[in-house]
Image (cartoon, rainbow, N blue to C red):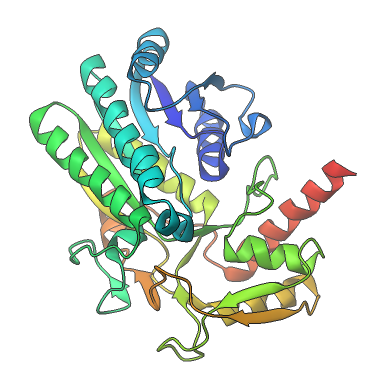
Length: 328
């Protein structure tokens, strides 16, 4: 069966497209290339340039390629930008997801894996959060993703669609084979920004907030290697194919690192003591959030392979060096 990967030319989407293609799965990618890269897509995948908000186009793609499952990643993802442009985020993330779901239901698609986020939790009462924690997003980004989750829940009740929503924690690293990685030069991901500082692409690294109620005053996050995230999506698809019920699951490692700990790891792996500057807190950033991952391990039998901060940093560093080489 053909799998439609929306946003499949982007950072996470391209890794998922490669992972599926590696297994011999027929893949079609739908991406408007606003932030994605054509050369990030695996050669075996077919690219359709367009928007998930174009219901007619999505319906045509589903029909022509006989799509039976959708992995939906197309979205705007920068928390501070969502605070500045909430309507843009509700349009791209929520309204376009509605259009995509409409086309999926009308075309008889049965399986749907959704790229959700830990941002739906906001600033949780306890740093270790389970899926039954009350959502309380602190940003339009988190709210836009939560609204899509709600739509999925209602659509699943009203139709034959079954879904898995994976609430990502902080995704980092790159394909170990260096076929794809985080290619957006001005990306806000901490590990990418720190690696760029180590390589001299940035003249320093900003740390936003040093007065959080954490051991060293900086935010704590659960960092997951992007290739382990790929494994979670493949496990979710297989679970749905085997008749699994719709579910929402955290996707992280169950332990976190502070911003300072990540910076120290990048300095250690790169061997470069780059400059760091402290800045005020950013709007929408919780102090600490770590995934309770019992559900995903139990339901999907998911086992991460790259749960090591130095490995994550090493792959991110190798990818950034490759990008520099390509530009020479």
